[in-house]
Length: 145
Image (cartoon, rainbow, N blue to C red; front, top):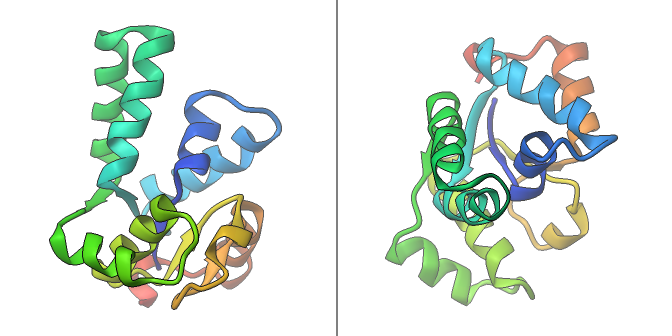
C-alpha cells in the first residue's frame, strides 16, 4: 500500500508526542520493513525542518530530515498539485496540498490523526491505529498493490 503520511503523524514520532508516538513508530517500522510504501509531502520536509530547528538546532534538524528522506519517498509539490489544491473544496489549503500530492503519486491512502480535515478526499483516509491494525490483520504489503 502506498500511504502518504500527514505532518501530524511524522511529528508525533519526531517530537515523541505521547501517546501517539508509539503507533507512529510502528507505522515507520512498517515502512522500513516494506509492509507499506511511505510517502511524505515536500511541504512536510520544510515544516519538520522549521519546527525541529527551533528546538534542536539546524544541524540536528538536518540530520532528522536526512533520516526521513532515507525512509520515505517525497511527494512533489508542483504547479499541478498547487492548482489542484486551489481548485479543491478543502477549507484548509495545507490539507488540500497534501491531498493533491497524494493523488499525484497515486497513493492508496493518507494516514492522519485529523481525518475530519480530509472529508472531501478522493482516497481513503486512515487514523494511525486503524492503518496499523489493517496492515497487521490483512498482512497487506507493498507487493499486494
